[in-house]
Length: 318
Length: 278
Image (cartoon, rainbow over all chains, first blue to last red; front, top):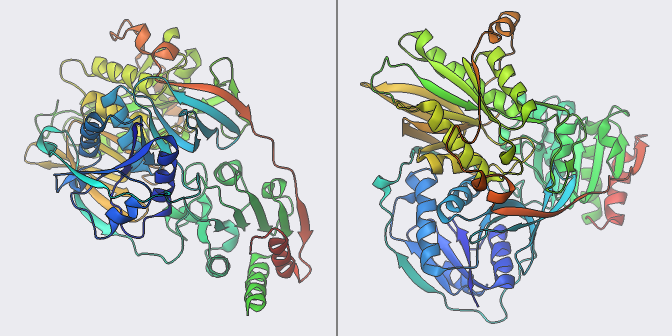
């Protein structure tokens, strides 16, 4: 059985859910193998990967792939593909991974498909196009398929028998020969205890109607164990950081539950969240377009409705 | 290519004619391509063009010698994206228009655009290629990275700020790239490929003077033969991916809408409970 190569930039224990999903998908197509973006394996990672049936872990000898933008990582991955001859390469759907996938596709003369929501055994993939208004079935027809898969596309499942992965050192890529931009500084954003927008099962989003006060939105998100999102109007106003933006020019999300508070639901916003399983909307204006797609809509003041709901949840739980 | 601090900048901006997201959009035909009847200059490309204009305005040397070329690829109507770019301030337009390009995927698109950029650059080459962060319809975000790979350029992608400084005579690009967990500062020599997010600037609108001036600006149409690309390498024949089916998803049904009479928060929790979401 051929291997399926999963690229994990910098895995730590516990493995991120998106990583466990990729490994699970890989195991349904072939024998999972992993390529890392860093030159050393952190404690416990090999065992964690073994639980998902990973046979080989390809580790670059370069200590500095992270100091350049994308190109050297794609060059390294191309070397691994040559060594491992996998039947497919899987990456997450983050923008850096999509860029690595794009460059790898050119290097390998391979088709690349992004934004995938499911991968079939025959490597036919499903994705949603035009902001979720079409379901598209697609396939790579040339080269080794390079696929980037969205979070929440599979239920992580450990292998029936864990493996002891073999570590394979891969000769260093000559970074000086790769035309790449240098990363000269890195500033970590303050870590949030909330789940990330892309992986959250519940998202509470605020818009213009918050008038810049996200406290009710945040409190409700925390009561639900969810992430906080925002409309473009709210991020453009500087009320919340841009990475929280849900919509066509922000993140496209598809959680189990999406709660829209004080957002009119212009098409740009709808495009980013209309594939959510259940949509709840709270808005003062009964004519807001968001009510056309909401499963449960409340015409009301978010500063009254959300705190009452937050309190009610706490009451029922106590 | 750039050799001195006062050498003119030669910038190519990729612009695209995309269906207006304010209207319903459709996939049509045998190859499930995007139907483009109500199309406009992609909103995300306006940020790329504005970036080019600001870089040129801040650059040293003879202002009239800098050159911004708006490049598009697509059928006849795609030229509208170039015309709008000329009105906003690009100096010349190039429209790569060839029937064999229809149905190109990211691989074919990047191949044809790379050849067009080389053609525009001529012997001296292009200093900076600037694109938006993604198209607003394909949304694969693959083309900027694939174009950088094909042109062997450093990629300075997905950036929310960019500036050009000079280290002696050598120009250096500085940029900021925001990720989910961290923000990076990036440095690159020229030539380079830059893609920008919608956080980078406030695009300007064309004014009357710009609209009048655009009519006199050069607009070239190129075929695949002009840029030395074989027909079989692009379009559906050159595609490395195929769409097997595309089905419109059923529209969401309208649910229950209530008006808050003081207990809507409690009703919301009841609803979440019945949906097993708590």
